[in-house]
Length: 115
Image (spheres, rainbow, N blue to C red):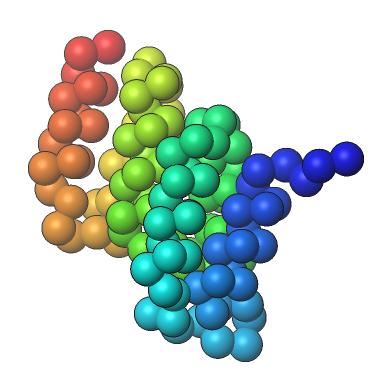
C-alpha cells in the first residue's frame, strides 16, 4: 500500500532539507529539492497539506519556512473559503511567526468579514 502524501512529503522534506533530526539548518536544500517540494505541495490534496503542516508543527514549529506555510494556507483557503477556523489559524500563525505577512493577514481578515 502506498504511503499517504503527508508521510512521503514529511520524509522527503526533512531528508532533502538536511533537517533529519541531527541537523535542523534549513539552508542545506538544493534548488532542485525546493522545486520538487513546491510541485508536490501544489499537486497535493489540500487536506493532506494540512496534515503535513500539523506534522511539521508537532515535530518543530520552526521547521517550515514562511513561503511553505503561506503556500499551504493560500491553497487550503482557496478551496475552503468558508473554513473560518482555519482562516483564524492562518492569521494567528502569520501574525506570530511572519511579521512581513501583513498584506496576507489583512486579506484573510477581510475574508472573515465577508462570511
